[in-house]
Image (cartoon, rainbow, N blue to C red):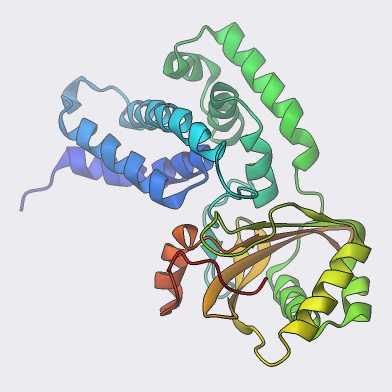
Length: 304
């Protein structure tokens, strides 16, 4: 087949478009749908009339994401329990992806922004799009977009990562945490956790998960000690160390064959956040990546 410049131009932009859509939406599946819709629009566009395919496609994806966010926010108002972004994972043995330094905690901070603030921050601060081009994309003047970006920056600044964990250290940490939490090793966990550590778990109403955050080291220690006693005869299985949205994490198979992905947020050598994703709707791509055969049924069951 002869080369197709239009297809080649789109494929060159696809990785960036997927990252942008995922950062906007917090969902791998929705990001892929948005990029596919952008491809359909691109296919119907006169390519010789487009001066910059990258700018055109970024505008298209951003606007499609804004449309998706309006319906997504309505769905999240009725979401069962805490909502966590769909985990985007890397295997520790793989070369690092082209990172934009947005960790899972920053993704959660972005959730508190309006759709326009989120778009302005991501396009300008993260992807380096000039302010004038962001204004064109959002149908706002440059001054208004600057204010959107300033407000967004102020909201997310406190969530900027302050303690980077090397991959080797991250794998040692998650294996030690898994072993201590499964066995109910209170002393081992106490040495790892910050006093104000918090657990957030997302089951989406499909599998059992904590409906409210578990806050404070003493509550967390009691929780893991109790779970270890309760499920001593049917312990979880450690599957794989991962990098989850820039944080050290792991996949495990829990009681009842439930897949779980856990990410650990660290500051000053202590775990300050434990983020557990159990909703099977958010883990399909991880099932495929790990070559697993696990439960995806919606009946509530599992670790908790």
